[in-house]
Length: 296
Image 1 (cartoon, rainbow, N blue to C red):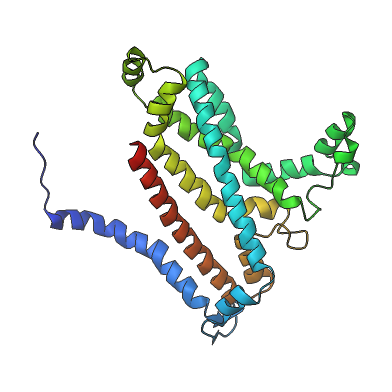
Image 2 (image 1 turned 45 degrees about the vertical axis):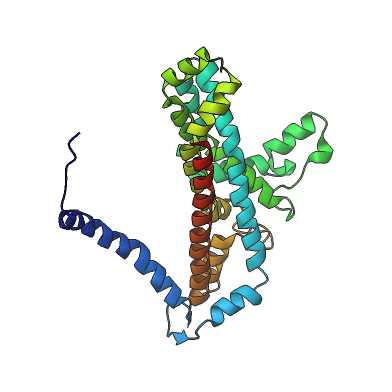
């Protein structure tokens, strides 16, 4: 087979414009945010350089920050829990359902809806009974009135209500990714395995699951990093309330920057979030690469 040999200079010339653009829209804003995090600044007036004071206050003196980090990480872990179920469902749909593409498209519908629409829809569902909340109405109608709550107003359960909405909205997204991966596995491999006596669950264990690991890794990374950056759904449904009970890192950053007018402090939170995303991306890739080598 003839291999086209391209000079390294030519490769560099074609890559350089994209690399410069990437640096300008990704790395430079990160560096600017890090520098701004060292300022005492309200975003409008004069700036005062305070070094790492904002980061020190963030890590050791902010009562909202660490609970927000915990909720963010829990949000990210919860978003990954549904991915194995998506994979199992994708396998079942591919094997037993005729015209499964139509069904997957239906599951994907919530993903294409605006987050504002989804948030307002579920706020209505979670409303108290006095405001016509559908969930409480259903519970009351089946004799489970003791289970009713003011779902988004109770600090202990509000964040879990938001987790559920997020899982509901993005279930179809990860199902589509896994379903596409399963469909791309050649049928010839399953036919050869069937001749050797491997069929059904055995074929999934030794063929489907090992070959789907790269696709599975994509879903894991997208779900985890996307959840670390979660903002819009929470702002629509609770705006971080009640009493900061649903604050995550991004909402705390927004409130600090634009409501409390502590732009330098908000930039410090943003820098922490970028570092957290980078660390976990490297960690997840390392773990999934080991899994891929083991089952590849």
